[in-house]
Length: 469
Image 1 (tube, one colour):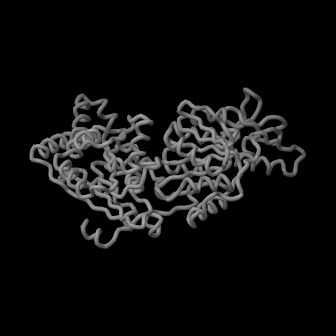
Image 2 (cartoon, rainbow, N blue to C red):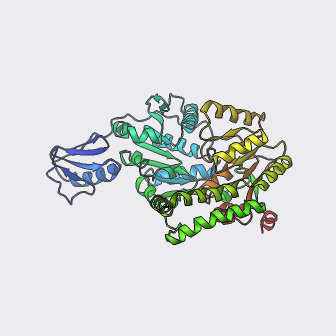
Image 3 (cartoon, rainbow, N blue to C red):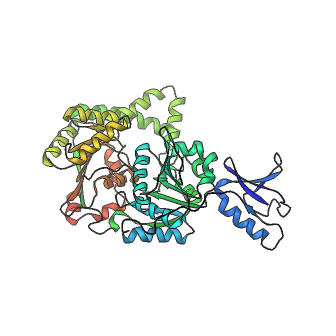
């Protein structure tokens, strides 16, 4: 019997007389080619089953799925791993080189991946959500492994034994390159369960899989797909598990600011229109499909367009109330000279803040060269404040900052933890601070409470907790 990789699936051909429809999971007979097929992601399961079938039989298994030579790796990395990084790698190895490692932003998840590559000793494909991250990882990998690192995506199509690739490119190319990489690593793997992104894992036969994220939980419960495509959770630590010196000490403070009478009246009118529609159509946002159901109802209802606009308007009023701009200016003056990152959920609000206070703004529309220039100047201290709408939430190596100000955001736990990670960097003399500006009398109060349920808030000092009460 011969097992090969065939355009995103496994093909078992030759003398397959030992097989029946029930003798091996995932294998299905394909009469078109007179052979058996299985999904590529099930390679490690199928191989083990076939080895068991042929163990006491003259019919041998020829496994030709991978033909890549072992990876040439250094005996030791050029850095010393922290205890938790070593424990994470050891746990992953003990689980047959499969599983999720969950660590906060800023504690060196990439070092865990680099050591995993070294210990596994197989050609590795690292899948990343953005081109910025891809370039960042390539630089770091070349530094540690002292060999060329392939870059696939953003116009580059270079494949090497160690290659970085975007999720988009991985989905398009996995059926052609999957058999070149026995090890696949998914950074920010909470992106994987999406209906398109998951193909990057489904079409890969890699038996060794590592997922990295700060928070795997998803609103659609998609984390269960992570466990089936990558493996179980093998190591997890939260922000409040770390001693001083790994992450900076930090305080958090929620600041409620009043809306003007005109803002409040406009907000309440638009919100009531939105809520009346949701209730009349019995839409529940506690369901993973709540938002999809709301959009579908808006598309079908005669007044759906007006309702959707009312929803957006009430959010924009609360997010950009006049008092928030006043408080933001006060905080910028209070922390003058410190590195500050201002977070918003809306591009328009980010640009409004940038224009009002003459600050550099980074959104998904910012060109790569300009983004790099802003971050470099922030790192050098030429810029002390950056404004961003989500694009700095994950992954990108943001220079150390000591103050974060959330002007608007979602109830996502992941988003909030990543924002903490943007400002929590080790420093002997720095105590980080995160402010949340909330428009009083708006839904932002509930949103803040939802995202603050995370264990990260267990790391506060008693004083800061009392202030928030």
